[in-house]
Length: 336
Image 1 (tube, rainbow, N blue to C red):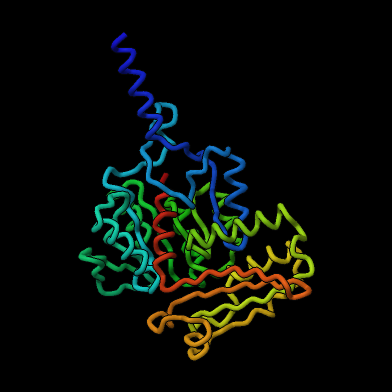
Image 2 (image 1 turned 45 degrees about the vertical axis):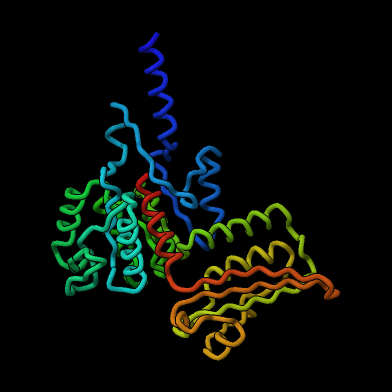
């Protein structure tokens, strides 16, 4: 009886420590252009699997002799994260986020001290971690990646490079069976998703990595699906402010507008007011001066036909930390 009680308690503890995992043949793509994709994937695999990208928490894993060969390998030190290209602003923000977590005592992940770029560059110091910058175009790039995988089992690659390099980079990661988080926007998205799915490869692919913003998009999508036409007749106005280097309308605004149109609004994306001049950003939008070169302020206003009712939805982001933290969480989720 004593042994039975001990065995039962041990099994209970294991169940508490273990999250339900996605099947090996599942590739999850979280796409800002279609937030429902993440929700539909979760629905297909059961409502209990809500410990997802939006609430990613490192978990311990169990393997049995029958599944050990297909289960991911997670290093006891945490998930090894390789950031390509950390010489860019977003790549560096992600690398800083990983190192900052370590400094704060979070051992869920660590920064791999090697990164790929379009060419060989000087080493980069990231919070005391010296990162060697190698060229992804070199003939030995594949050998370098395989060596890093052997040295850092369970390694996840984060890609913040250039739109022109997206598809070639993804093909490279797939060829070498390396799971990746694609935060770079642009490229041939259809070919990107098709290639990853056809290979049965693991990846998180999303032009919007701020997981709270993705959650908002998903909520709007669900509301539109649940209450189509609820705002029929209402006038919608959309204002977005970004750094002056961003010329086009953001993908986030396009996705939210699509949901509002499903709710009954008649709004053309060309009607979005793009605020890019500094005086208006500071005076009217309230953007802090220190974030003029990196912010995303979005306001969606709905007004009833008789002007007696107003609704306003707003999300204001300063800096890149929300995207960097979301990317790190995505890498840990992918590892799980």
